Image (cartoon, rainbow, N blue to C red; front, side):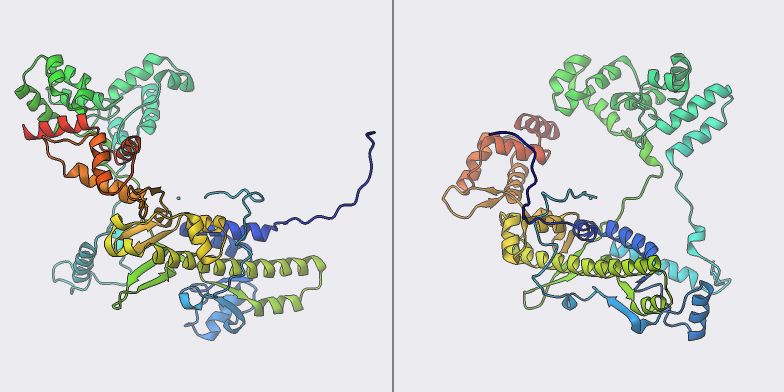
Length: 518
């Protein structure tokens, strides 16, 4: 057959993903924080989008609202011309099975995965603040005046770097040494450790290695004791040195901390050349030290986890499933403003821009609506299939995969996977990620119902917690006990689950419990 170029006409079908469809699919897997950021960006770019709760002050007089609008050269938006998407009420969500997002786009679209005070303490704080602020002047610290803000009396926590810099400034050191010290202070970790290479630092700063090491020796004497340590043993040694307790025996003890972690007291006694009483005293001294001295100072506050779905039980034992309105942005499309500006726009380029803004705004509204609707569908099915978990606890968690949920709600597995990513559910048993309820299965010895991996881990932890000091359970013994309870599990699986739960081996547990009983 001769090879020659030719022209052919072929008819085929393929799915073309528009940028709007890609955007809608990406919204499915965004967390509530990422979704809020995305909506804020769209509000800034699209003049036809309005914030549904804050941008429009409906309580203000009409002339005030109009003056604010005229100041920006725009006409006053009319609330009657706004297409409102309110997702606060779960019952308002459309129950439609036709979803442009419910398709397997894995081979066509490379998606990007973008992961308080207790009630009594909060109440006490609010009560104390109220009593203070509402007290009359002259009655012991009462505050008056509308300009007062409670935040004015708050002070920022001093960071470790600020604390070290303050000590550096009062020292009479050469300018070059202070410059190197300031550079090293910026490199210290939050816990107070220094793990960088002095040789690389000397090359970066174009100075001698001795200058870096000498400066580091100065910084290692700063407060808190133990700062700029290279490792745990060095950190504890610096603190003992300040207390004048770092003798050769204690240094040997610090050099063999791995024996202490393994509870190998006999070998530790042999290495240090002391008896058990001396080792016990040294352990007591070590326990009084701070392994992370840098954490005494201010650090970043961990963000509060905000659930996307709330699960509560009704008096009739049924379950109430609702979306968290705080994580659902309320977006308005100003159709009246669109009509006004299109009637005054004559250039083709401007009309195309306004039309594109309207299409984008409408698509965003639809995408947010479908996202909320899909989350609610998945949450309802999860509660239905894992109801025994919510009633009786983790021991009754069932094996579950994405296909089971997808088939039940008539959606594709990829859609369920995206919806459950970075989403959390607040339940009477705590707050869990939606993916927590998808767990692998462990076979049953009697051929009955399979066991969820999480419930097997929970059973493993119960067995270890209940073992006696003179009867430590080996992995083989745990396998035998689980098989008696109908769980067909291999020894290597027990070892894997034990490592995941950070449970030491039977030898380490025997040493640890023996040490605690002596």
